[in-house]
Length: 186
Image 1 (tube, rainbow, N blue to C red):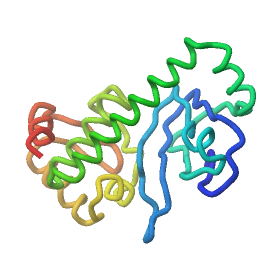
Image 2 (image 1 turned 120 degrees about the horizontal axis):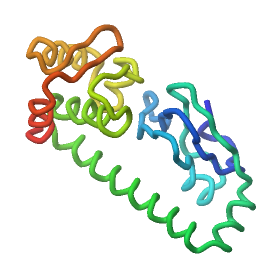
Image 3 (image 1 turned 30 degrees about the horizontal axis):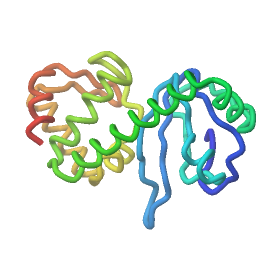
Image 4 (image 1 turned 180 degrees about the vertical axis):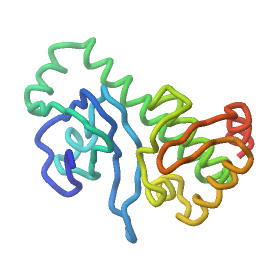
């Protein structure tokens, strides 16, 4: 775990390599909020805004991170307006992406939600149609607000329909166009 919800946030974390899940404790279980690929800053809103981690960051693959003193980071932002602007842009992009994802989660059926995360993993995280699923089926189900059983059934349907190939955690998207259509139609 890179940082844990509820602990004092004294450093800015810069992920230099790897893949991380951002997750928060809910009333019943953890909720995965976002997957973040390096390079990226982790925990800016919680470190700067609240001083206590409001969520956790856990590495999903071999990852490397730098911990930067909040005081040094704050001074650098004050002295470097270009850097400050880039940080604001990154925060804005992340917020807009999260809003879109939450809207899609609430309005799409399971096939569309699962198609969306598979496309995201393929295009934004791994940049390949073949990759190893970084999440277990249970975590994948949590991420798209579904049950483990429903996600397993839908993955089987995608496999039977020759949209994907799945062997253990190794996944290959074989019909990208159809998967994108399912994603769009929800």
